[in-house]
Image (cartoon, rainbow, N blue to C red; front, side, top):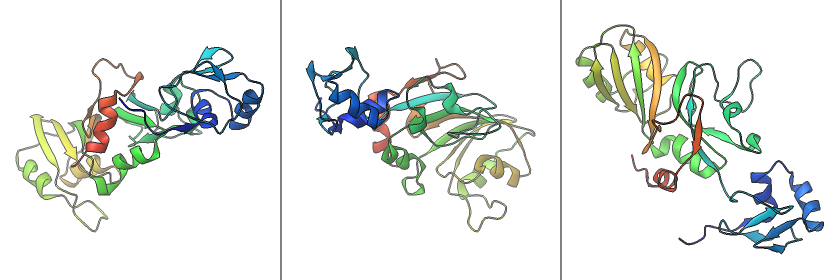
Amino acid sequence: MADSKPIRLDKAISQVTDLSRAEVKRAAKQERITVNGVAVSDPSSKIYESDELCLDGELLGEAGPRYFMLNKPLGYVCATKDGEHPTVLDLLDEPNKHKLHIAGRLDIDTTGLVLVTDDGQWSHRITSPRHHCDKTYYAQLADPIDDSAIDKFEKGIWLNNEKTRTKPAKLEILYRNEVRVTISEGRYHQVKRMFAALGNRVLELHRERIGQIDLDEDLAEGDYRPLTEDEIISVGNEST
């Protein structure tokens, strides 16, 4: 596979260590950084993902954007910082966590798939309304729901204080009060408000899928893993 675009040495090292760019510059001048076994003193030098990057003789992880999936537990907020609650970034054991952001947030009382990255263009394709990235949720409702709701979701639902209907959504009734719903928007509390508009209430909400990326069944709550190459590429191929 061909290399991706080159990246500056100082940026690459700051992504995979806790060093600032100024500290990387000093390390380069001290010849503590090698690329493919050769000392590099210019922090603006360009490197590729396939290059072997070492600091003080220790092999560093691949340079370039980072992509993770995380199984969000209850009680965590999708924010970089919060004064009252733990954030999903607290669950990550990664350098420079402050450079990561959440692509598609969940409420504090919603569990399931969260994508975390430092690739702004990639996350924009998930969150931008223009790209219509589907998101699928499992929901447990307070009251039973009948088949007539399927057609209402398909036509779009008027939400309180909204000027337009929701875009067509797919509703699958799994049991009397258990459903799976797929939406292509990200309005505020959208799934909860859609059922509220039908006189029902969501008791539990769990995101199973974003675009073509399914939550890994082997991930326990609070665990995370890097995305596979196919999962990363699927976001660019998302057409719905």
